[in-house]
Length: 93
Image 1 (tube, rainbow, N blue to C red):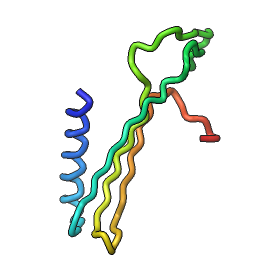
Image 2 (cartoon, helix red, strand yellow):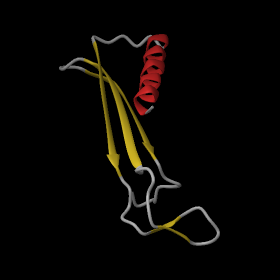
Image 3 (cartoon, helix red, strand yellow):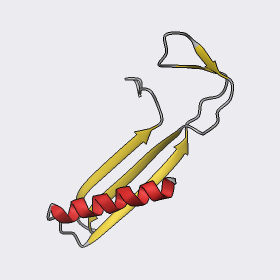
């Protein structure tokens, strides 16, 4: 399921690049995903009452997709997209 969504995002971005007239000798694509599930038990945010999770059914992840145009000697435009499975991100991060 996740790879299917990544394919859709990549296809959409490729169409977007072609519509904006970006011309490059090469397009570099990179992605990464990391498990950021906190150690359990943990208090859950987003509720009026305190709830404590004692198990995690699915991992909490942070994902990044990087698209860059240009060549090895001449950097072009770079786009970085980050998604996190969170309610919010603290300002100190």
